[in-house]
Amino acid sequence: GRPEVAVRAHALAAELFDHRDLRATGDYGAGSFRRRSCCLHYRCPGGGLCGDCVFDRPPQRSSAGADSG
Image (tube, rainbow, N blue to C red; front, side, top):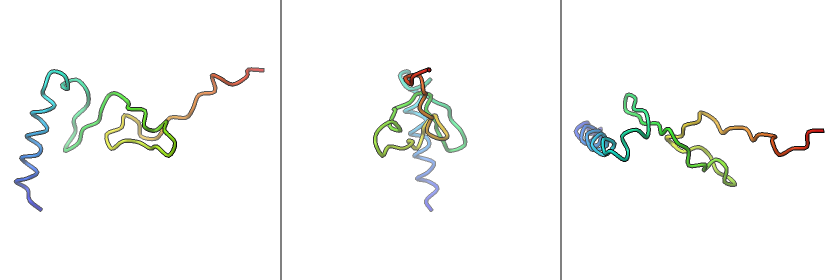
C-alpha cells in the first residue's frame, strides 16, 4: 500500500469534518466514520444500507398502519 496517501486522506477528512456544518454529524472510530442521521436509502426498492449507515441492519417496517382488530 501507500501509507502516505492514507495519512493525507485521513488528515483531509478530519479537516472537512471539523467544519461547523459537519462537526456534529457523526462518530469517528479508528479509521471509520458513522453518521448520526439516515438517508432512508434502505426504504427504496432494492435499496440497502449505506457504508456509513446508522443502522447495523435495515429496520423492520412497523405495523402501525395495519388493522388492529
